[in-house]
Length: 350
Image (cartoon, rainbow, N blue to C red; front, side):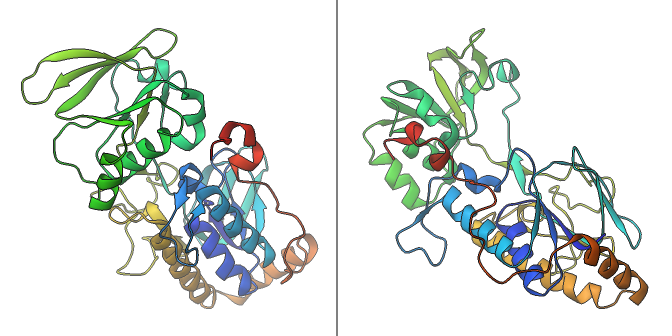
């Protein structure tokens, strides 16, 4: 039994954990077994997060988030949450391997997932030339001609990063108008390795055992044509990760968790949301972190309204299973999140 359970290990989840842990509430945070650290693990240089004037790698930033949460007594569970029961005074979290947990309050910080094109060949060739993460897979495409699909800032960032490895990078977008910010467009346009293919949409991925190219259609004329690529990176946005609890909570028309005004309070008492799972507009690391702060403060207020017997049960459980929270930094990180640190040879050019 815990006071607070946090599901998700991105900026929102870790920030909420820092605040809740500093309040002495000893939260448990479920990181996931695979996607520890959230979407920033797939980002290279983060230049707009306050406090880092020279920029910082996404994985390095998330390592700092994690270390700070652990320093104040957050319990990390490196496992996937398979289901949740959010109604009632006691919330239940069922994990894949570590068993079941109970909590008086839950913060949902599950983030968002990469959006897929949904065209033939995508499932067959996923991981065999098709990727959604340049940071993860860019080093596998040295001296090759690869495509980036999308027209926003994430597509520009992916393309710029991939020029460190590829001979050529072609940005494919269904329109001649881009959603990307002017500064990102200017950076991409000034890179001599980047080419542009506009007014084109992908109809099919070509290849049997590995990607060989793309079948495209001109969105103006309807003409179909094939282009050879040995790698394709899809950067067309994200969808909120709500499948775990979408049947228990109210969602908005855009699919994110509905909350009360500027708060983190969802349609169920004791359940709070933070980060991209409730944000269909901004989706920035700093706004997610701020959202995590809001959720933590809302949780503290909510716990103050609960029955004393429930709070006493948590205290009794904690006294037998959980060490006192420490305010001293951990001597070693719980786990290294940085893929460059884990496999430096793959990122030798960085």
